[in-house]
Length: 400
Image 1 (spheres, rainbow, N blue to C red):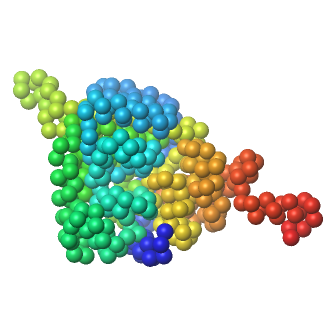
Image 2 (image 1 turned 90 degrees about the horizontal axis):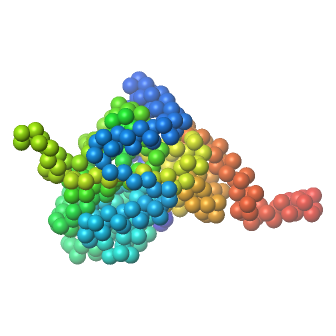
Image 3 (image 1 turned 30 degrees about the vertical axis):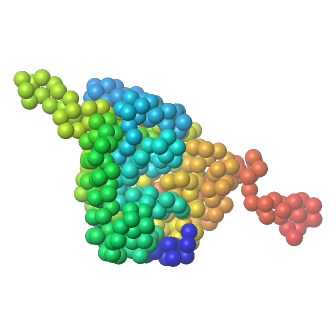
């Protein structure tokens, strides 16, 4: 990342810190933290049981579901669905899981236009190169108003002024025009309630509502998103919002519990009133079954990277795909392999523990990283300078 982008990112992070600091120590937030920690602990320890319950609930709700062991499986399932719907344009909502499986690149190779509906993600998409996000909920937090103006004008052949509302309205107009003939929407999910078979999604822009109104709504979510009940799911996303944005609640919470339907004519059930005629949930494993359990406690707030000294110094080169910072490095070992974990910044981490101190569910990322370094060394992935020091000690009884 450029020095100017890092500076803008740090300013954005400081804004989030100030907002969240004003409410994260309130009695209600502290109670919520304890509740969500217990929800995530129980959910991960009982994931197999909750997974089976979720499948049964999906069946009851007329939600189609697929199980993807790997990212390749997930992409194949998506390909088949797009062929079924003769799709050439997709309305996409923000999703770290879709970034994990590299959906946009995969579909671009098939000449399918994936249109980001989230403003930050759309700005990065228009940027075309060097467009990795820097925060889970604020993907373009490293770009200042001048950068964004240039990106929009160049990509959309526009002539907007460096004024936020003018930029927003220009991008919104372009997105809605591109989606006029889109019949498929795709998103992730912030949490899944196994008992009700409901998927909870939070957003401020209203864009997930647009995505969910397409004929086919595809939802890709990791198996770690499953929690016991809808009340638990709401608790998780509420805590995520507090630590991600510094607000008690987002503008919108969408709860998807099945396709669009009505029974207002003689109580006869009819599908596809205004929303999706078909909802398909793809539950993704992709290494999660083998992951360190604490890695799966993450609620996706990004507060760890906001406070991480390494991330604030080097930016999004510390992390893996859309999973940023130390936790992203840890997950890369299970999603990919030891070499990817090493290349994602395994030895960048200072092990200071600030990520854990500022994590609402207290993920011990520094301890996980330290253990992974030992395992990485055993299979030959470690800084070469360390290897030279080790050899000198062995040969010369000195590191020099």
